[in-house]
Length: 291
Image (cartoon, rainbow, N blue to C red; front, side, top):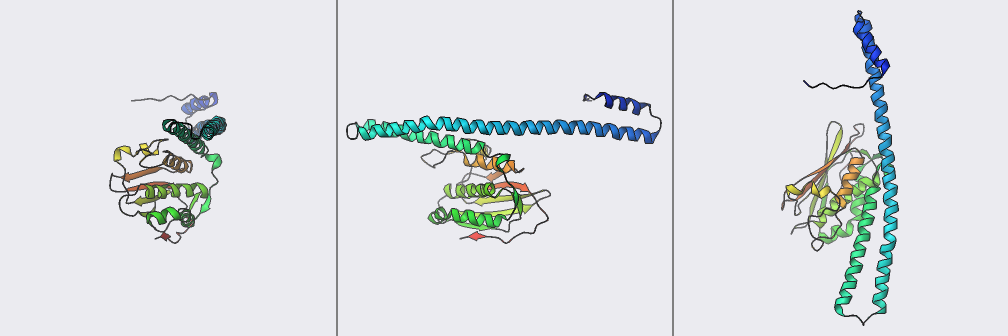
């Protein structure tokens, strides 16, 4: 048998000794309740302190990331400017190999700037950035589809959507979740035009949303990797990107108290799921679609 000991305050210990000595059952019950309430209060205070420390740590981390990214961006801008200035001054005087090398320097620095900016964006997705309110995802999704209009038209994508329930969430951040998942479905499409379907199911304490597509799919061994920072399954020559989108989506969902996962096999499309706390007092609005 495994036993666990918990340090008790002196007053708690005294009550426990009194409880053991009390012959009257009602008095013993009162003593037991008092001991339970005192222990619960002590644990609650410890939890409040831990939460406050975590929030302070997250805030300090966000400020640090912002300061570091700003300090790093300045010398990178100087490198790009100096290299481009040098190319203009030496226009026609450099060998082709030297021009290619200078172009590679500029491209590498610009990519580094994009990575730093993405990291800053990731660090700022925290509770201090979230302003949740009751909203209708269908209306939000319509705005997202309008923003993605050129990409949808170019790819010939068809987007359908079931009725979506009202949820409590930050509209900007939830919009980013939908936009990233739909944009990924367009980017990682197969030989056929993308078919994207958005739906939601009600569960006991949450609504589970899903974004399904008919794209190239993801090998099951890579399902966890796609949510990690700067993790790419394809080379930049195949698909552009920094490997940050799904990491930011995961962070947004988790800040809202939800979770995210996917169901996919390579060559058979992908279906991303994410959950949000439910609000059963609201009815379900009408579906939206874009074809």
